[in-house]
Image (tube, rainbow, N blue to C red; front, side, top):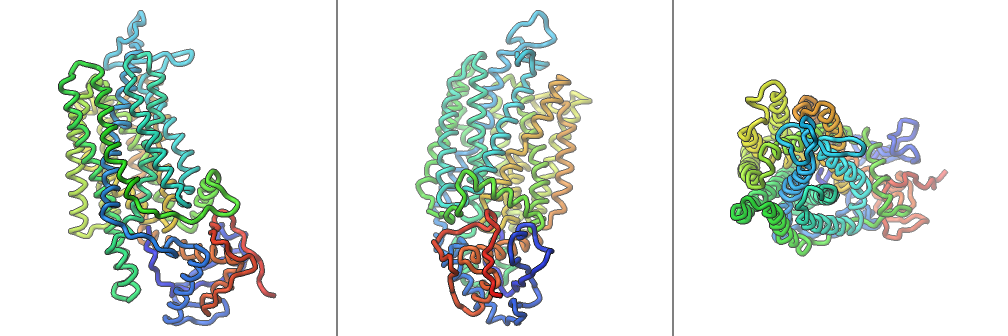
Amino acid sequence: MPARAMDMASSFEISRGDSREPLLNDMDDSIGYSTQNDVLPDGTQVNGDKANQIKENLQKYEQLFGADEDAFEQPTTTRKELWSYYLYYNGDNGVGPGSYSQALFQSALTGAGHDPDIHPIQKGNCGNAGCVIPWGSGTRSVASVVLIANGICFAVMTVMFVGLGSAADYGTFGRWLLLVLTLICWVFQYGMMAIRHPEQWPAAMVMYIIAYIAYGATLVFYAALFPRLARYQPHVRKARDEDLKEGKITQAEYDKIESLERNHVSSISTAHSNIGYLLTLVINLSVLLPLQGNPFGNNLALCLTNTYWVVLGVWWFIFQQPRPGPKIPKGSNYATIGWKQVWLALNEIRHLPQTFIYLVAFFLLADGLNTTGSLVGIIQNNIVQFSFLEITYLGIAQAACSITSTFGFWYIQKYFGIKTKHMFMVTNFFSVFIPFYGMLGLWTKTVGYHHVRDFWIYNILFGLFQAPYYAYAQTMMSEVTPRGYENMFFGLFGITNRASSIIGPNVVQAIINSSNNNWMGFPFLFTLCAAASIVIWFVDIEKGRENCRKYVEERKLLRVAKESGLTTSQVVEGVATGELISGSSGSSGTVEHVGVEVSAKKDRDD
């Protein structure tokens, strides 16, 4: 997320003609930028003092018409608020919906399935070879059904993130949305405790899908909060509101301060997620060890896991400070604003090229990595014979490595001043290696996820390099997200991160179902991850930050003009003279987002 404090000495040039940006096709005035000097519409040069006066007066316009989050007082991030944020992540660690629930679901499927190579058909005789269950008029492999369930999850999440991502930027909708999603996940995780018999696999599938959708959505909408928490940290706020304005630091120096704080909050929250992952698994040993051999011990472990999240997660909803966004634009509602905003965002490629290059590349990378994780998890469950105890031991190894690597990567980055992108590329190398290792299993059984030792290797590597991957991925997104549009762009990021796997699982399940070989999915996943990593290397973060600044400042003027009933030309002249004159339409205090209706009043004087 780019810093708000930008030198408004860059000029607003009012351009007319056919060479307008797509968003502004219906506008009488579009706004361009010149970094060389400051020019008013009449061609008058603006010196530094005049530019500062323009900035001050534009801020008054923002207050009058509510066009910017900083136009009104925003609370400084408190220690209680920040720690409650970390604790929620500590509880929302994924052990329940991402590991135990899938194992229960797959175990029920396997118990209801049969080995297609053994005749006569005998239910429940599946080993480590093929296993199919009745599906429609035929049969389908267990791995294929699990991947279909994941594909359904990601498809629903896609619709959810598109429809609700932008809506969360307005009013208090985002706050209540996160609460509802959290409660849904908690309820259905407790519901999974009822799965005890193979014939319950359809119910297990439904509850797994609902819980996983809610879990994935909580991660996305919760992640969208961290840029603002970092931005309003006391030392970052002082740097922006005092040091930058007084000229004690440059814009580049402020950008570095805010970027490091974003990395700090992101890395610490990711570390807490892994700390929670480790603690949950260790606590579960108190149930799994005494109840070895008792199938219901798995259900009790899931109950304990979910309770851990409830106890730690509730504090965020108590200590979070109110940070409402602007009111919903006129002519829109919470059900439609998301679709309008995403359509706008997709039309913004020319304005924010680096943002969209990153989103497309990360879409492919996350698709490959998420599907790889699902496929490795399916194979792992078969190899360890659905033993929650063995899964817990492997998870503890992953969590311990994750905690170490998250803090280690952060301190290395801070000590050497390494850029976020370079740290991200280190993690991406191992994102490519993980499916490559699985691909080797097509030609040899010595390596490639055929033995328990392979899953120790996988979980250790995943912990060491994929925990920082998630932290740097969302920090990279925040670097190229326009300020004030976090939920819209993190909603798109959620599509690329969680819902991207609408493609991978469907392709891989088709490959596996036709070949009856789980390892045949790895070549496709290796190619996907490798291609995406190459594209991410060419994303220019510095250029992306500058594009975001221009994007935000342009839309400030357009929104002020829209709400005030003035043309952009009149707004620029007004801020130059300090005259705050509302147009004939007046102001109701409601901000109309320019991306929803992109027509301005044509009240230009002849």
